Length: 61
Image 1 (cartoon, rainbow, N blue to C red):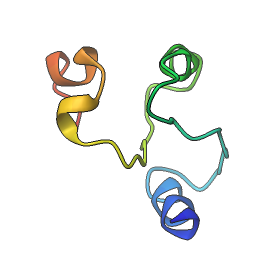
Image 2 (cartoon, one colour; image 1 turned 180 degrees about the vertical axis):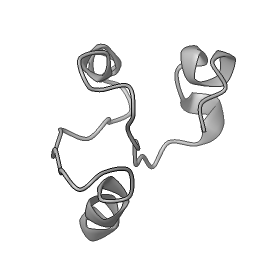
Image 3 (tube, helix red, strand yellow; image 1 turned 60 degrees about the vertical axis):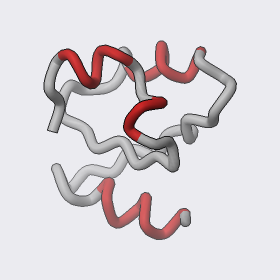
């Protein structure tokens, strides 16, 4: 839900940046992630096996 995403976004730093959600089927949203800071929390409804390969290879937390 939306409120959970807002709570999660407050975890890494006090400054909140609301971004468009990543939806299944629109992979152009993954390119959008490259423009954000490296320290980020990405709330998503996607299961781990549906996330971009880079997330798995770079051992993101």
